[in-house]
Length: 150
Image (cartoon, rainbow, N blue to C red; front, side, top):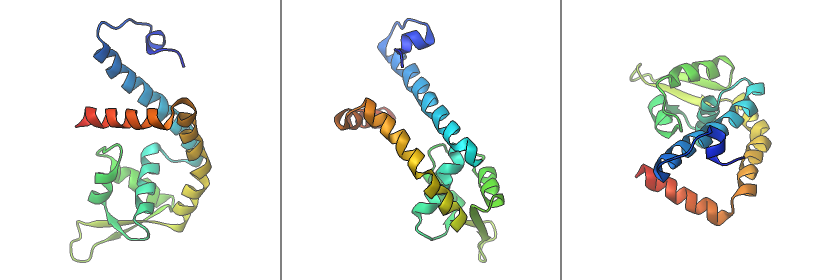
């Protein structure tokens, strides 16, 4: 991939401005790869994220609030995204008997099968980064990105 100046056809007056736009541009580039990878399976990256969160619950139910706390993109349409997963049979939903406002979610065997079928393409995305960055580079970038958010 060419340098960000060439991609955006602009010069930057400040290195921090360049960094800001470079992070956004690169995140969008990675997101596009993820969207294209998931499209044949009929799910979005946000839905994939929900499935992975529910798989991480190891067979236990999670309420929607807990799922939202773990999401990469904490968008307000998580309930709608989950409704679509329920409609596809990838997630089951159950209302709490004590508090009907609380909804519990759990990944279904069909959802687990879908995640399993996506493991190879998920690894391919990780390998793409590994070919471009050493482990030391990745650790440093992770530290720097954590620092930006702190």
